[in-house]
Image (cartoon, rainbow, N blue to C red; front, side, top):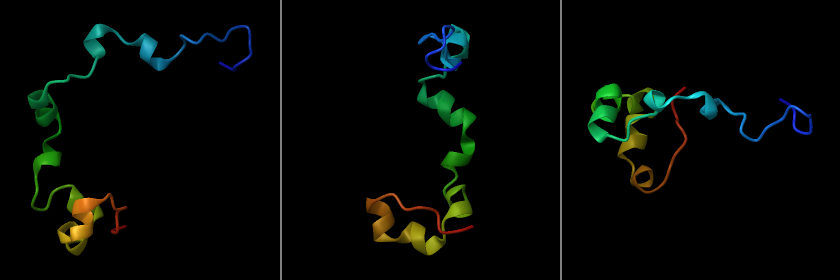
Length: 70
């Protein structure tokens, strides 16, 4: 909907269409179970986007770096 139109409502959003059963879980174990690729460190998802040198760098341990593998 377009702001300023008579049909606009501040309550119109995708989140208002959700039911309580659709809410993401705040449980860490559930998150880990649904995202196992995030917990594989050797040859895991990070190596898809970063070189090994970048992952091992001191800079990468301190700040966010944009991916250097394309």
